[in-house]
Image 1 (tube, rainbow, N blue to C red):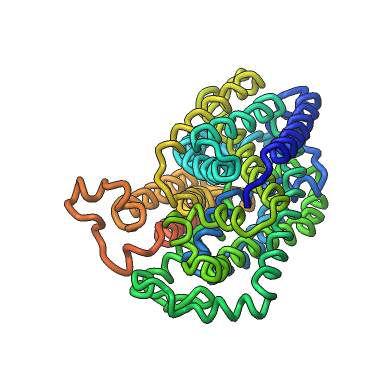
Image 2 (cartoon, one colour; image 1 turned 60 degrees about the vertical axis):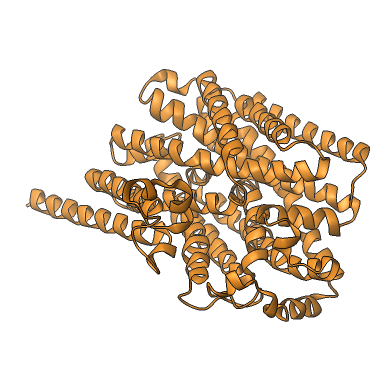
Length: 520
């Protein structure tokens, strides 16, 4: 439903004004480098939870993964289970507390800095920062695309204009307010997201005749699954695909495991633990973070699948066809066609909040990685607020350029790729580092190198979804992928992460043997 441009503009201006005011508050409280980089290590648990959740859940989850659910069905709800069990409970209780303690003990101010100081290796800090600068712009671009696509369809402005304006507004308060501004605005944006997604779920079921009627109608559509998807194992939008089929491997290994496990080693999320005053604050944050993630992902995946019912009833088409074949457009098209004018505006703010909260964290993480961990590693100038502001600006510009070059339907895949890379490269060393009293420096370096290289190799030469687009395998070997089914549909994470863990464990075992020998 078209929105009144005057009303829409007025509400957006109020939203932007509040966001910039919160950013200014962060700027006023940013007095030294630790404030800019770690919000003074004294953040309220509710703000930590909302900031963590809002950073975790971006437009890639709502627009990108919502579109994937519309295309592949409700099986994606397993990702919600992983998000809560691993992304919140395991992350906060098992890793969060130890991360905070190690951060205080070492005085680390970024994730790469933490890794470098735990393992007493400046080279590891550099390597961690390099991986962030290689992989994170891709994810940032995906988040930018999600927000820009919705602005494009809602405000009827060009995609390029919406992308640039969107990126610039976020850059302003991140550059000047640092992590305090980021977390303040995250909390505000997280509240809007919670309200918007709750309304989306309720209105969708109301429009489709209730929970039972809507779910039954979706289950009855199994005969409408396109032949191309049926051939790959899809059985319907309300059921899981055939076990072992290409779509099953994509759903489980790339989307559920890639994102569900990948969240544990996300640099922009790990830093949130380091902003807590004590472990009690992290325990209290779980009580807010769990329900928040449930509503964000659970609603996106459920509504995404149910859009098929709506479009069939109103256009005679399934969702992906009604959106012109672009899965990233399914949720925006559904909102604009199905929802009342006021909700379209509310949901626009929800998506703006989701994108801006994640973007602000990514800008901050990339900027500090460039300045603190790559350019000025070990130097006093690396802690300069001005230098980090410039770093954020450089990475913002790079991300916009990448977003303009990326193809359609890339949001969910780009998200899964980045999270898979982070898990493969960082998770083994990170897990051992925060728990071991004598972590193996060589183990961390080789684990990170093997994990990252294996992930890149599998992405470029084996996993069809990326190898086909990149074309590297085709050019160098003459074939699209060097291995066939089922390997070509198994996500790089499934191969790279175990190898990375094996390397870390072997070196850690050798470290313990050497310590025992020296003690004798």
